[in-house]
Image (cartoon, rainbow, N blue to C red; front, side, top):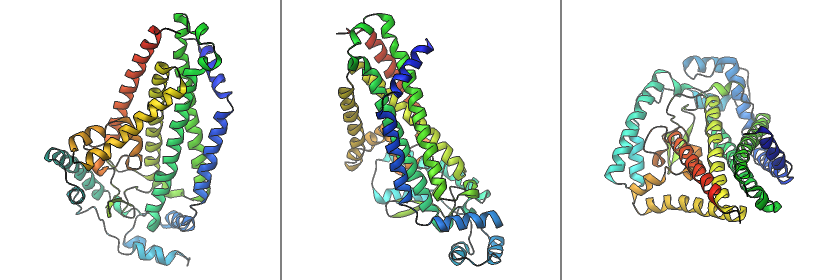
Length: 382
């Protein structure tokens, strides 16, 4: 494949004013959301400073050294939250999470067995965390859950969403650009011209990933201006100070391996890039078949909404086997982003399901792209 064709498609794509304008609007929106959530940033900065001075592992030694620290507006609150902290994972049973799930909603015997196997596997991870004193990590103290929600539940979710929307729009434009310019008949009348779609796909993929990376870099840069993390990046994401909700119940933030906040961020950002590529590949394939950006957009939107709506529909009617199968569709990869790398409660039946769904999504998207490419080669231009 000639790289000059790829460069030409890249130039054509990025010469559209709407692309940088849309990215700028996304960045401004991210900034507005971040700066509207300034509450607790001073507390997190103080915890970061304390961690730098006396370490970030709670216990008797931490209590003693914290008491010797200079007076601060947040010192008393931090001392109260960490005093006599004990390892909560030492005698923790993951079966308690399953019991909460079953108290919220009934399920079929087969699905319950799958969940039981999943939480048996998670118990081994919890036992390892207990040996490593993972739960004794200070993280951001009482604001750990708020910080986690802000960073992963809001900011990362927004940037991943903006990334795949941008990538999808890029794909739809490039598959329909000849129709917009009224050059489709002359360009696609030969086999050589039809092979141009390969260069278009590569240009779209490069641009989609670059746009996503730009959103990440700027968004995390703005986050760092507000939240002074410092040593907190090395804190455990599964600290006892951090938790998530299962219905009205609080459960530990358990991941499938001990992870720091920094490593959890990198893993989430990487899987987000995979999510962007999956959606863009699917959009490009649909765009080649439809050869009309608006028509392809409605096909994608209708399919996505249907796949999403079927998940609560099946669980609400106790069609649990169908629910389990539907959880493996690419749409649910994005929907469950705020639970990635955790047990994911109702939304998974096996460890690391989000990674396996991503691999399945890559396979299906590639298969669809291959079929669409062959279909496009054989379809009449007119």
